[in-house]
Length: 165
Picture 1 (cartoon, rainbow, N blue to C red):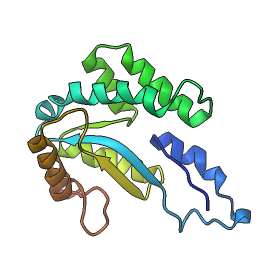
Picture 2 (cartoon, rainbow, N blue to C red):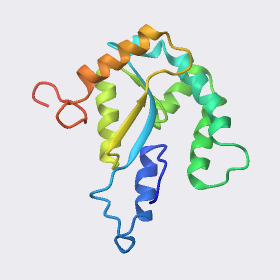
Picture 3 (cartoon, rainbow, N blue to C red):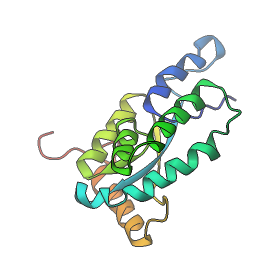
């Protein structure tokens, strides 16, 4: 059995070479999982109130998840994005992390776009980490309910569409 840890949508396509048909692995029938710290709220302003917690979490994880002696490409990308964010003011750091899907922070529509982005990259199983960096329990539970009720389609598990979309 082979396991792959995917840290960003770009990682999915770069790791698919690992599973070749001659190795008896069919990418069309195998699952690819991705863990992303995620905060969704009714409005962007409400969501971005979680920015301090998200930035703190990623800055902390950069050294815990990617120790200094790790030199492989997957950890290098994670470390680079984390270090770039660490040197920026919190709002700019958060935007950098969101742009690279290191975290997702936004309203329902933002979340739908990110779910679709990772699905388009080949992710089949998305694990959202809602409890991040000391967020209040009520905010975490609210984000979980909002994600389940309005972001994902219960039939497909991917981004739900609204109206004529």
